[in-house]
Image (cartoon, rainbow over all chains, first blue to last red; front, side):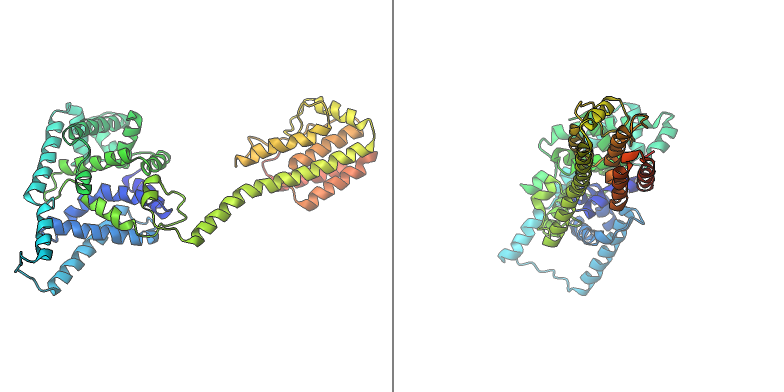
Length: 202
Length: 250
């Protein structure tokens, strides 16, 4: 089974009425979509807003998705179109530079903005997570490290990794899983009770 | 957490899990929040390894999307709605619910109708045989005690119970929604005409679910006419009918 087929299983579940399967697709691709949108807009918070809008558009269009292309390819196109439309509409809107911080509504907006994860504090958290992941990878046995890097950084399939590492596909699957488990364990130790989402919900 | 399950989750995240297992894990994910969080962290680990600049490592986008689509309609018939989904699911249109309900009823009533027809035919055959004479019961009992391949006959001594015993067994086979392991027919009997009649009656009962009402009636008429040893014609008719409508039957 390919990643496309695996996503299609989730897509079909959404089409049969399982909304939570769409949440899994969003969780899987949110970082990639935000990264994609960041090619069009520089502001990470704005990129997140556009990514959110793109996912919602995708959900609404999902009954028409027939699986002729991979879900991510389809999502990619929606995200790019949403980003372009957002840029076009922004160009049409007048830009305001003056912020009246005595106005409660505007000052609330600024306050919210300061609490966004793309603020220095938010980015510091992201950097901390990145640091934990990197140090956990450094601590991995060589074969686990190679397997997870080939998978996540180079995007190789298990079969390609098996050929590169001269081992069975089952061993690759096990190595990648054990690498993820080790990194995940470190993350859970540092951020007991969950990351990001818990913080947001609080 | 279960290591095998985690390993499957990791493989599914990479799109390397076989289709059937993938469907099962997807089903599990729809109701297991811990597993969903793990899925999120796998995504976060990947993003961290790729060092995607400017991409914050959190689930904020997913959380916002989930909050927004909670108010959106559920697609399909909602058959795969998981517990996580149920918490936020919008109201399913009444028409969708009605259709799903009708389908569920049809699933149960269809096999029961088949069982009802089979029971009626069995009762008619047994009543007829009882009317035929006092010794027919003994003959049937003798025939029933003989090991046969039929799923209808049981080693019960009384022939009268043979028809009644058909019901629970056929309900069990049908209510599971599965096809029986195999279709069998009674072994040819070299006994008297009455024994042939009993065998034929059992055959008709066994195949009544798969034969048309006209063919079944023909077979029963043939059975009535075979009192004087002319059972060959209906047997061939029934066999032909069973063979035509149930290709798996030998």
